[in-house]
Length: 303
Image 1 (tube, rainbow, N blue to C red):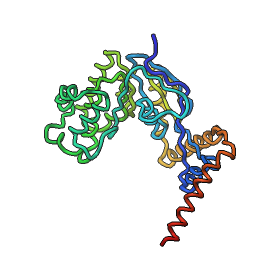
Image 2: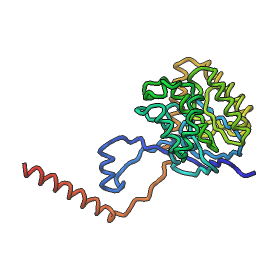
Image 3: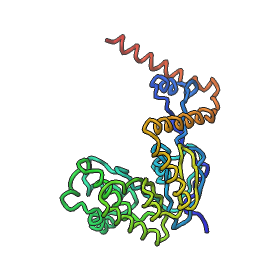
Image 4: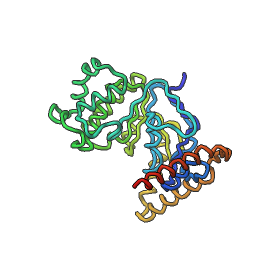
């Protein structure tokens, strides 16, 4: 059986250098004199899943779970490696892809259009989306910036499941709102499983993971600690969490700081050495910079 989603040697690197002067110099020198501060949010993630698999993504806060889910949803692109998805994906997360200034109805239509649906298809599914969200005719006409986090999650989930995605990514969307609605969402995701759709499920709830997932990925501060059958990985993770919770608040903070320091150290050690362009490539930038200075000088002189 072929894979549905293949994640191959994927890394995501962010530049932590926020110095505006450095970035300006980089602009005019085409990066020749720019010193990047690379940080690996994720490093060398590698796995593949089949159609019908439900994959739990677990890990402490800050470990890279949402970065991974954003890449699976094609919201952001990997710095290195590839993600091959056979079909279309849809992300469900609080506020994901929702415009705060638009009404609930306008967001429904905008999101559905973004998923390639026609106006007639949207009209045909609009009432089903509204009924599933349980927002009612009054609230759906209001800007979603007035919604609670639970209401936004309801709307996002209702839209996503009615766009008929091949791969569904649920990032903490069921952690808000009432349990009745969460149970309804879980039942719908089980229906998706029966249809052979692939689901990635980010949650801190072991109970939901055990109910939903047959596979699991444990991400630990940017690296994949485990991947495979869900139950043994969830058991290992629960044991780790129980030990972690036995620590005092100060000890938990020290542990996180220690792991973050290791992550930054590895980022620095494995920073890719970029090939520098020849100095002759700086000539256009220098000319542009001189023209800019000349323009400023002329403007000052004319005052």
